[in-house]
Amino acid sequence: MSNNNDAVGVLRTIRDAQPTHYLFKIESFSILSEEKIEKYESDDFEVGGYKWGLCFYPNGNKKRNGDGHISLYLVIRDTDKLPQGWEVNVQFKFFVFDHIRDKYLTIQDSDARTRHYHQMRTECGFSKLLSLDTFEESTNGYLLDDSCLLGVEVFVIRYAGKGECLSMIKEPDANTYTWTVDNFSAISMHSLYSKAFKIGGQNWKLCFYPKRNAEAKGESQSLSLSVADCEKLPLNWKKYARFKLRVRNQVGGVHEEREASNWFCASRKDWGYPNFMLLSDLTDKSSGFIVKDTLIIEVEILVMSVVKYFS
Image (cartoon, rainbow, N blue to C red; front, side, top):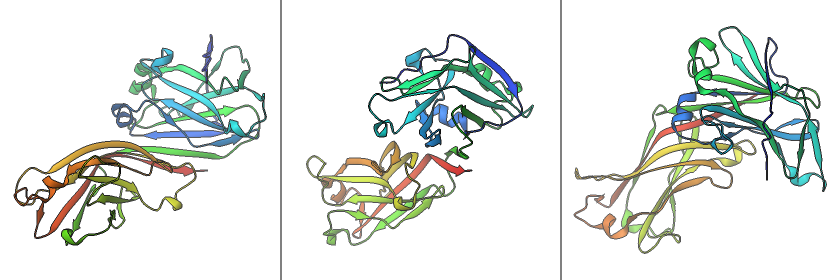
């Protein structure tokens, strides 16, 4: 269980120096907000021998009366590795960069009180960090060219020197991949993977169960999008994508098409539909999906995230 424990009083000041411990840059904020993504959790960073992370709500944490605001929390991580009865006491500041004046708005508890993290409270922060009206007002400088820069200082130990940049990209360049499956009737494999292809700087693969997926009901085909080369990605990697999966009709009819979205990660590296379409519909000679024993499958990525790490 966690408790944000919003401060009764909030102190806001201005300073020149950047946050000491962690920077979190968001590009294409409007897309992140429009996609109705409830929250985004940053990568881990270490301060004082503990693992921490930021939890950001672009449209406010509505469960904690944050509607109409942006919400930001400091979360302690890897608590299962801490001794029984653990407690961590910290003071922290959040930062929002003013691009126009080249200064940082700092937000902290007005009474400089200590926040107590323990088993029943693993996050603290502000449900009403800034109102969306204030945050999005161009003259305030917090959102410039649809990008913002947030940060945090945890008053425990020295500079950790890590950060990340999250970009939300709508319709990346060359965002459609076409996979031609020849000799369909001769396929005997349970599952079939396309060769790796790159969209938005990420390698992907399509996965197709040509006969039947074990999770599917009846004689249905499964079709999904998968992140390729996962072993080359950073620990705790995550990637968001909204995409269309499509089986093309080759005789001018209607394509079979479905849309999906997912946060891909190590435990969920592929996503799609176990019941994409019936085998009988696919193989019907009059349907136009298979012509000269050839099937054409496509994926079109509509929106995706790109995370870049820096120090």
